[in-house]
Image (tube, rainbow, N blue to C red; front, side):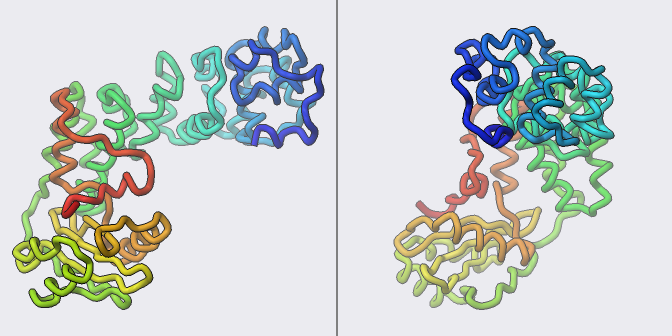
Length: 349
């Protein structure tokens, strides 16, 4: 996107110097087009103005700004005018926040996250009061749902991964209650205290207020075929060459449901039930071959339409919250990819 800001290739006299490459990163060539070597006028700009230029070069500003106007604006216009071009109605505090953004420019995606947080009132308040406004500092805020973006919670979040787990816990805590529980749970978790206090409250709320038995298994339509007898289960386990038959007791108890997904390639799909409802636990082709990303995405789309969730079980998530509360590292990290976020693989190897 940055390269598309200019329609022609950089001229030799307008190539980035090594210092500019260090300061501007992926924006270096585009910056060099506006501030030719030795780029003295760009280096002389306050940090906030350099970051403002990067936002405009990335095409993320609220108002489209052409190359000639861009340079004039960041060099000579008042902060209020620059801020309005960057963030429109969310302009208040933008330049003060960017003044704490550091000397080197960020990745384009980081500016997207920054502007998104500015547009959300609670996140805006927390963001503007950070001592250092850097991607590493505001990434945890971006992981949290809007209801949890309070200073009391943000202060207690040690890492982006911890924020992601707290967000998962919040989603499940609300899911197992009524929708109007959002505000009540958020207020309870925001009551103050250190990391341990916040994550222990989250652990407590992963237990529902009222206990109930397992819901009926989802009625998935063709090409799904549900296993409803021991004979079917043994036949499917033999066909797929897996250990599905070992789970007969749990299936008979109504806390696990198994389906054959009769497409090409066919897949054995297992769902588990916990207090937050039915969850996708595993999906494999014959001989325990992993499904391709596209097939998994289609499976998740169909299951979510039937009310089935994905992600870690309550038991797994509770263990992760316990790690954050106590500073331990017993749980395996959850990666960022779509497949890693599903956290499959807890039924068979």
